[in-house]
Image (cartoon, rainbow, N blue to C red; front, side):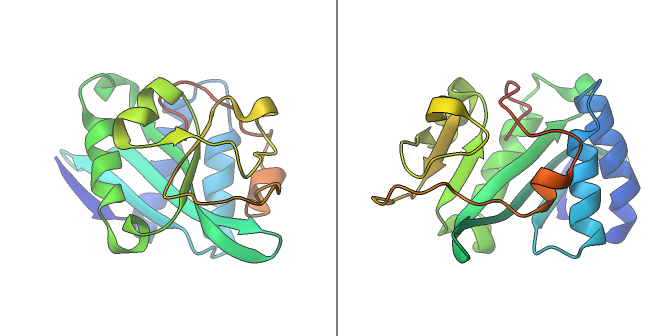
Length: 171
């Protein structure tokens, strides 16, 4: 198993993985496809096993108004046949050590029990527009003291449906 930066050759395999990891939802694959089509500045990695993409993680910009204020971890997925084997955890730990990620404030909308093991903590500020009461919104290195609604890249709104917490496969 190896982790590598995403290339264009990975794109179709990533979309297929996201559809398998999130059955019944096109949101995640539509989101990532739109990121790629619009050349968004997304930091992404894949986990490869026997020439197959078995896991994927992405970080996109977070905004306070029009100003950059950190990164959103979204989406993160592991192929169903490789879940509960530590693949996702290894990919998250790897990504959190990478230069474009390691010093940034990070936000994730996901299962608190899963993401707390990587240092994420419940996030009171900023406010997540996709999570009433911020109950599944977590952060790392977040020193926000101003009340504002954190912004996402426009692709999040243009994909099939708004994101929401969906267990540990979710950001």
